Image (cartoon, rainbow, N blue to C red):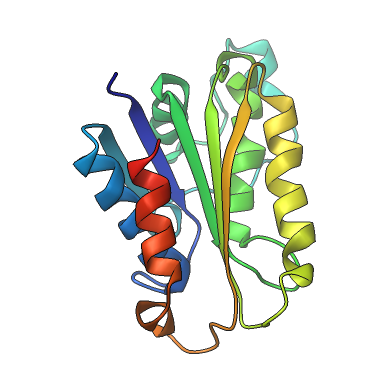
Length: 179
């Protein structure tokens, strides 16, 4: 059965290591017959949540008029969400965190999602990625009916594009193909 997959790439660098892993995931998922869209959230105009709860009083409409309404609608419609980010100081990128925080406007409508997590980092040990993965899982815990389906942590990726010379590419492709 074909699924609607939304990949939220939190890399501020287009074709950076985590973004490249998203592209490989997408190739595998497309080959498997799924409908896939990848959004580079850093290329969108998405401000951080103001915590004003205007959305709570206005049927989920945010006081900020930016690209988040479009992204949020796609998150609600997707069967599968892929959250991807480079690991920055043990956490996810600010751009992806802003998206996660802004889902508060309609968070109860985001439900029953298969979720995949992709992270890339310079460190060789996966342990420093734990807080970033915990951030992804924390969000997943707020999504009713969400199920964690896979995690890929690309380690030892200090240089731009370095991931292309690793087995992480195959792993991302296979993860997408096996959705």
